[in-house]
Length: 582
Image 1: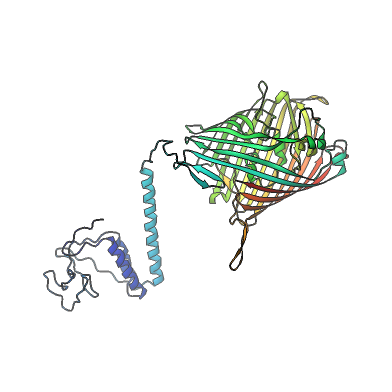
Image 2: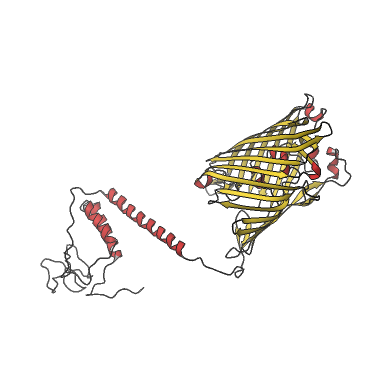
């Protein structure tokens, strides 16, 4: 940087010199000799360059004595060897300029602590003004334009999994997977197991609950994609008896099946986003929460009760439009889907479509979601497959893969009943109060023109269920929230778990610990259809080792009612899960 030319042998003094005066004044304050009014004048003057040009009276270039404007020395003055103002020198304004007003001495001088507080406040105000100026400048500057696809070098980074991305992030790629391995132990009343409508023996078991691989990312900036396969979906050969129960164990094998398999058009005018493919229908908060982030081993019994999730693993082929509004404080989604009972993204039949939509809002959101309230409502109108509907609920601790679980874990069941149309409705509530989370949902199904072989036509049947759960983080975290998805996000501990030897002993991190309790109720009795009632209490303990691994323990108590006394009963279960994802 080129300095301004010297004038009269002295370079004009600018803002930096005034900061120097601030320091000198502060030193004077520390010894209690400078009044507060003088300090205020110094700060006021430091915001502008000094008006004087050239060498004022009382200041001389290096090597010359301090003197009058005509060069004569001031009697008693001391000459500075570096050309600056020596101690005790008197500064005079240049000839023809009025002298500045003399500083008014206050009766009171300020203390060193007060001086420091004033200086800190002034510097803080200056920094805040600089920040705001930079933000305003950034808003007015045009964003840098570039041609999408011109920078294709891929860099790898870790975001709870390995991601590859180009410098402008117009291409991204993540290849990951999830493993969940469960242990289940049971104890049940004999009436429940072997009564007239008993569910059969509950056997202890181990189960690879989920084993999935997925790829996801974006291409050409405006297209998102995801493809995930479940590798442990159990099937049996054709002709296996439907009531074989445990006898199918030797005949069961696993086969891959799709979960997410979709392409999303993003950044669309007005609409926002359109997704095409196998996907989750926009209904039920716990359904839309990722299986990787669940606070209990299984979702509540409402997941089994809800038709869009009951028999197709929670994924339906269709097309959906969705977006987030008002700084992501509101979301909406609506789609048309093929109504299927198949877990392979397959559906065959004339009609049999469903229209499903969801609307959510965040009336309160603070501290990055540590304090918040979420409200949601969803609904679906469905053309039943073959004009039939079925409602069934399994236990909250699973001991085997499908197709074993439909026989040994089903607690209440309507069987197939005829209906010409089905309407679903759901209400959602979620609240964070620091480490405390409260979540609840209610869901109901109206089944039009119901007909059963036992009762004949009975009109519209009505089934419903709800759950309420409370979670508490013992280590101070809060349940993270994804505002665009309007659902809970990945839990991240304040300190990941580790235990290693150090020079002075063991070094350790605790991970995150969470406790939870949930009560659920489902009623499948209506107008002569006797599917039973279920009350479910689940207590859980979660140890989040790090963002990618956790251990979970659940105790479940379930009571089946709604039948005669010889078929009702209680079941107790203990479950444990090991999970990691990448």
